[in-house]
Image (cartoon, rainbow, N blue to C red; front, side):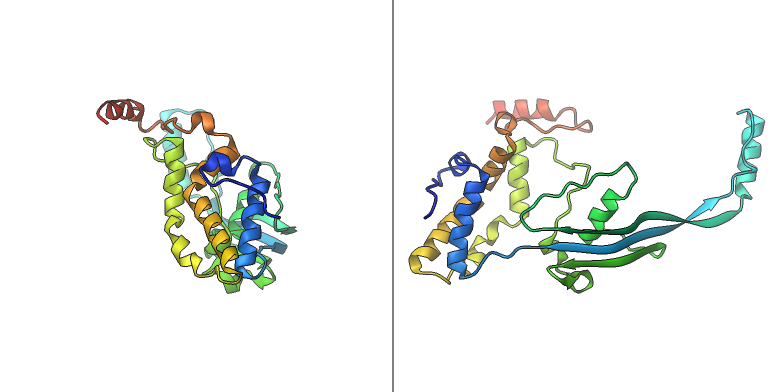
Length: 252
């Protein structure tokens, strides 16, 4: 039996919680598609990452006092310092699995390789000549090498540093991201909702349309951002954005 959820706005869609909304939409889509929704299992086995780094031997470069003469001597010695290559171990023999429908917390000290692992699993790790990667990564049993071109469709990576437009509000930022991620793809996807009865196909399409239309509001409800959704993001590089928005509103 379907859960009764109204499609008026993000608040009514989330009235019974995110799990109820997920079950509501998923059940309709599965009937219209005629199959279960796809899931992704990520496995990595014996992953090791190392980098060859060129360093200078500065044993003879160090001087005792930071005088002008000593600094000149230090610069001259640095020019003639010998270079050699050292191997830096970023990850060593790491194995694990990310099950579909679960959240996995990866903990580690700074510099322990957490970001390197996430970038590797999302296909964003830089494969330079001085980088050596060993081990195997699979997605639903398919090797990562076979999915290089399609991996961005299955795995996303969120960087630690946020990059936003400082003059936009929180809600506008979410709406902008939603548009960039394919808000207009609903018409193309609608052709797949043909596996059920006409009523089931229509129910799936209505649910999908409501999700696409109010998705930014749904995220706001999920993250508890109602009180700050109209707050300007701002940024240290644009101190006048708040003043500019205030002046602009006076002329709207």
